[in-house]
Amino acid sequence: MNQPNEKLTTAQAAKLLGVRTDTIHVMKAEGHLTVVGRGHHGTNLFALADVQQLKVKRLKAQRDVPVQQAKLPNEDDLVCDSCRALHVRLLAEQEKRLEAEAQLQAEKGRASRALASLTAAIG
Image: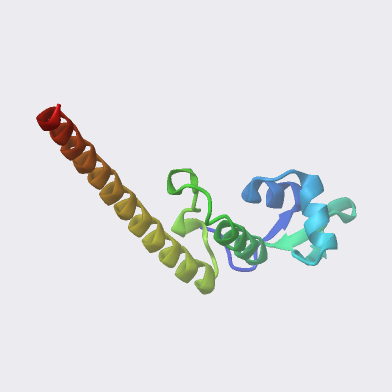
């Protein structure tokens, strides 16, 4: 299991966020990520918890993405309590959206059948 004080290289942070290393450098420059140390040869190191919090923020910002396309991290991979709590809320929200979508599809089906019955009765 991940340690709360674990540090990630730029490449590892990019992989966790699903972005290119160039994007990590931009995120650092914009203040979204903070360098917490230096690795071999002076490479940047980022706190795992910070990267995970950024991932959760990015997921929250993508709420307009269809529910089927949203990819949440595994709860076991999260190290900070606030990330876990937000993960639980996002899962609950995702489940509600799926239920609402299923209800909408069922209503559409009933409406289509009713329209077909009316059309058949009239014509």
